[in-house]
Image 1 (cartoon, helix red, strand yellow):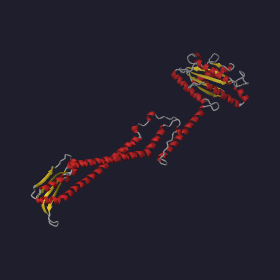
Image 2 (cartoon, rainbow, N blue to C red):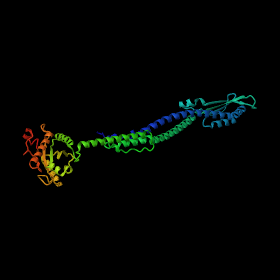
Image 3 (spheres, rainbow, N blue to C red):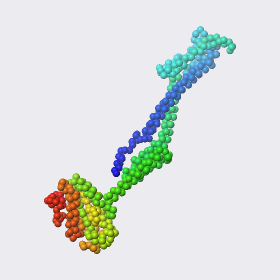
Image 4 (spheres, helix red, strand yellow):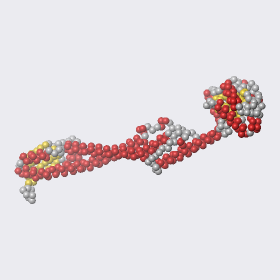
Amino acid sequence: MTVKEEPQDAKVARYRSLTTKQALATLLAGLILSFVAGVVELVADVRNMRSEVRSQTEQMLTLIEATAAEAAFQLNTELAEQLVISLQSSDNVAQVELRDDFDRVMFRQGERAHSSNPLYHWLFGDILEYHKLLEYRVHQKDTGRVVGELELSLALPVLGNTFAQRGLLIFSLSLLKTLGIVLLVVWVFSILITGPLLRVYNALHQVNPEQPGHWHRPHLKYNKGDELDHLVKGLDRLLKAFQQGLDQRDHLHTLSSIDGLTGIANRRHFDDHLQHSWETARQQHKPVSLIFMDIDFFKPFNDNYGHAAGDECLQQVAQALRATVTRPDDLVARYGGEEFVCILPDTDLQGARRLAERLQNCIAALQLPHAFSDCSEQVTISIGVASALPDADEVSPERLLRLADTRLYQAKASGRNCIVSSDKHTPALSKKASSAPDKEWV
């Protein structure tokens, strides 16, 4: 089972993060709602403003109607002047004119104000002009007599500026309310949704592919029992199940590649490693060496000391061999029974011979008593050494293994507790092997 690790550049950029997208989306929605709400409020405010302006103007004209009628009836220009000036002092009023019943102007103040803004004309153009007929009565129950007319014009620029200021205030307040709502929504979402989601994402991003079950499960304080809490629990179960699968894989791999008694590589692992080392050496044009070893007179040892002692002997020999062969690419394996083999990539025959001597010495240093050996009072090993350059088509790892095995048996035939690393006393495996030993086989 192979787990592909997530690349480092998979980290989410800040401008693409979920929090940023949520904040921008909320802000955009808030701005749209703010604009719509501002337009609605502005339309309502325009209606109110029109109603206020019209009501105030008519109320003002009603208040001075009687006095203006008396001034027109008596042709009192001074009183007419006072009335016109008092009306024209209002900011909204542009021009006031008082006429008698002969349509003569008794007094006029101000000028009509114009504006080039079409929006102002559209909003207030129909409420700028006011005409009030002046009726004079001696008694309240008398029928009034028209004695003049009062005209009043409002200042359109003033009304427009007032509208603009009120509209700006409305939109500003709407925008401030929107920003407040956006911040509140982002904060609430950050606590309940985006924050927990980001914690889950960061926890998954930091998962070790080789140990997914040991991930740092995020603590979701405000999500107990909701969908996100169930999601995290499901992820936890999934990662732990995946971890269990990896553990089973490793356990099966260990069972299939490690010798159960000695703890070193078994025959299966040796075959795979030899093939891999051979292909690598062929590509790199480097030699491969093998050391084949056998414990001398192990059957008498096992028969006389017992199987438990025999197993302990195999274990101590295996550990001593593994402690001596320390290069990462080298391999020590139990080939079968009391036989051990060592693969040495990028090692020539001389280097393999020197290592074989060290292995022989490390076994002797164990000082395992063997009273039933014909060559020593302690446990010893016989060794066969072979090396090859995998460049030629005729050579193969199987032939190299047979050559090392043949030299091992030559060492055993020569009295045991010795090393054979040449074909001086070993029959050639083939015509090719015997005809060109310096180029292919050594």
